[in-house]
Length: 263
Image (cartoon, rainbow, N blue to C red; front, side, top):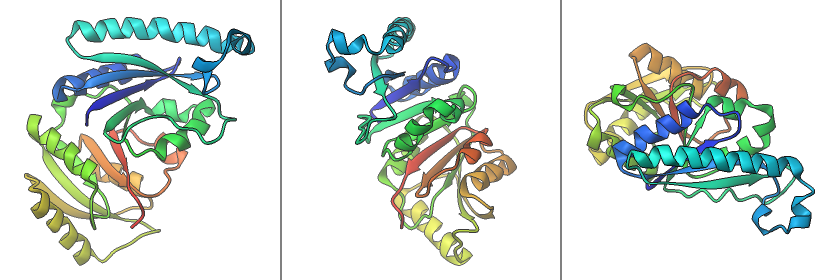
């Protein structure tokens, strides 16, 4: 990954999002972009003064966000981490929306950001994005990661998944659990799953690996149950299906979700 997007709004826990972004940026030597959500027309920066006056609440929120981001940038740069700021102007009534996130970025957000009702329209857009999403319930302590759980269909994992695991291998020593989760919606013969996981290990040279089959009603739920059972510290999940709000609400472990086409 080339950049980390720290996605916040005016209710975000800055320690969770910014603190975790800093830990990862320091480890991987990448830039942080603090991206602050403000509910305003997407083309706000092109609006004239008269049009902006029609959105007084947005003007207040933008000024508050600017002050906050400037303070956060100062703190990050003092620690010799490259950082920038940008606004995410969002209006749920607009169509054909482009969040302008890139494939080689990692978007970090807290779980509560996605649970807030006002952010629901934005949530679906975020989960249709190609960049990986790191969702947190508490600050990520990168040096405490000893076990990572990777779940996929393993027929062919994404290049972004391989790159992320290999980047972590460069800096951390951890065990990697490859687990195929059979759900009510999708089940596979265990021999096929094991064969596919062995191919992934051999092809990409993953070390310190274990392979498992696990049964659960839902994939995300199964990933966390398995991780809790095995002492996992981080989940990497390739996802080809929508994730429900209920699944997110019950999620506690840090999870990186990588969108994957159905296959």
